[in-house]
Image (cartoon, rainbow, N blue to C red):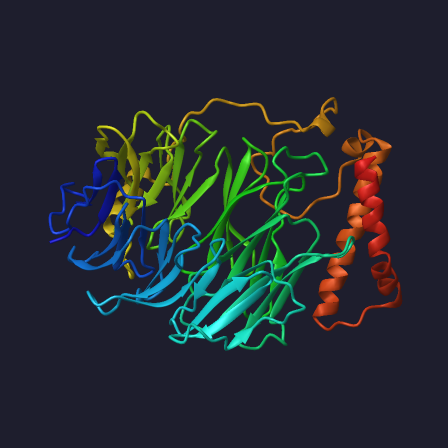
Length: 532
């Protein structure tokens, strides 16, 4: 019998399953694969897991550990359809056989390939949540098929749309498609547009933006809203060495918003939805003085989690605990635990240096931090913690540990509120003590070096907010060029707001229309100033 929380351990000697707390012992019902795994993937509902090695893909049940079926032949990677009825596999391009395949696996041992193609690169493919629609992008067009008729196209995006990336909404509601259409003309914006399938004539919601080399689309679990993270490789303003990111919100009711952070922030380090789909958390700002906040569906801040060095967000499966971490270059591995439903405060802290992977277990009480290969070739191990910051188990690999895969079955078990109540009594009205960390000087971009106050840390009590006008003292320290850049940017921001009003059907005044007509010249002026 499996424990409430079970997880796979992938190491150089093979792949096996372990029961979680309290015993931490091998789950013998799950057959160990003695070959080194090339990949593992778990179904969306958490009830199937695929382990691919050098000769085949074995598919196991996560409830009883049984081998459900085997897909023969080695492949590079695989993914499940949302309900686990199909397995999509991909292999290196070949002239002699199809390297992209969709295999029907719900028949148990009787698996069969229902669709295959010979492709030069891995395609972007997605199923609708109920597995009635299959989408695949080819060049700048998205093709839709009615499952199981994968061979024929039932619908496609218009040829003149030129889609660079798309995403299909999850959840049981109506199927929505989000398309990213990059700008093809200098001075014109890029767009993210949401449609309700199969109608690509009417736009449900739309957001335009100018700076976007890449986009990342993160749907809420229920599929009623999406966070769009746009990023550039280079921040032309010189505020950040790592480029510039913006966070946009769109929902299926037609509402859109730009998530405003600190006035001088150029980086969104993380953004994640809560499992309840009505809240999301973000980390933004300049390292090491980043700010975390919890926002509702109206993009209003409901919990400000202060300033610290963080770059990772992890909600537990029940959504009542939010883990914030500082990993990678933030070598302290500091972890903060926040209760975000009842207490709305920090309840615990701990430190896990050299962490390359962090994941919650299904009980929502325990989480695992791991040091894995190939990123770290020595000291490969994993540690299990409870939500109070107490380490309850540690295991070290004899050679290499490649990762941990928890069986996050849906729905998760209820969170034991009595444990939280006991911890809260111990804390009283005070938040948990902070983990001590070294103070690191804030990064100062080249454009602000030599300027008094350039790159200063954000005040500890300042909540994320819309960009505020500069004070007279700060403005006097700017060069004429920087003053001009700031003025032009302000005008472009005003134009963006007017365009949003126009999309909502509001009639603009004559002077507002005149501002809109100057958009192209202002963009050209800004580019000339930044390059001069």
